[in-house]
Image (cartoon, rainbow, N blue to C red):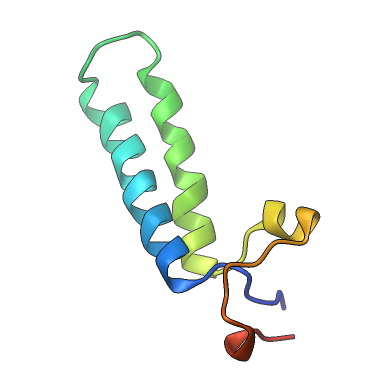
Amino acid sequence: MFSTNVGGIDRIVRIVAGLALILFALTGIPATGYNWLGWIGVVPLVTAALGWCPAYTLFGISSCPLSSRQG
């Protein structure tokens, strides 16, 4: 379907960042009133799971090694 453009280290960073943002949204620590913005952490989790980032496609970026790209 889509060619992979998110590499291994990039995936790990996205998973950690996504989980941290969701944890911020769920716990509310610190209570700033903007904790709902933490739900944006779903985006990096989904892109890490799919191995494909639409923004990378738009800008022609890839963090994948050349030998493992599909498509």
